[in-house]
Length: 229
Image (tube, one colour):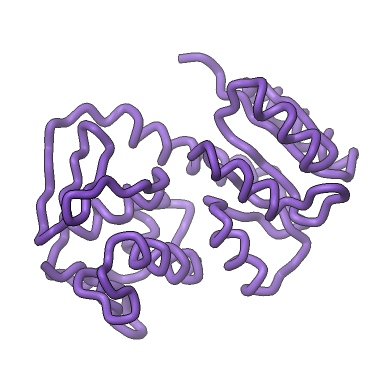
């Protein structure tokens, strides 16, 4: 398997170089850009397996860069931000980010998130089972990595797909926030309840006939979520 190619985008050269060196020494191929415009020029001409980008950048910020990437690609995106407010993290997720790290961060934390995001993506891409899960009007075809709702194919990111499949496999069971995070995101996770709030909201928009009154994706307040057939 070839080494993953990571695009690191940040207007701070010391941080850019820090991330690049630590990824390269661990076998990753790394490309760098200092702003979103440079990043898009590289992204549109190279095969990229993961994007790591800062929110606050000149010319084209990280949120708009994420939105543009998501118009044509499901490549995993990790946002770097000095902003600690949950609203900013939610905005990043709403634009299509898969994960975020708040500055300052340690290299161990960064590597853990990089490996987890790539693991989730590769699990989806290499799953060759013929299993199909049908619940009501929803069908998840694991071999084709495809979800149809009322006969229409729904465009899901790898994380959205894995989350929906996990919930569908446990139809009728109340799953705690921690158990969902560790089963879908990985053992490095467990306290990031805001991830689930955003992702469940995105899934409801895509699969529910009435997202404000969901039929399938039920919230168990203070506990977790349940898929109801």
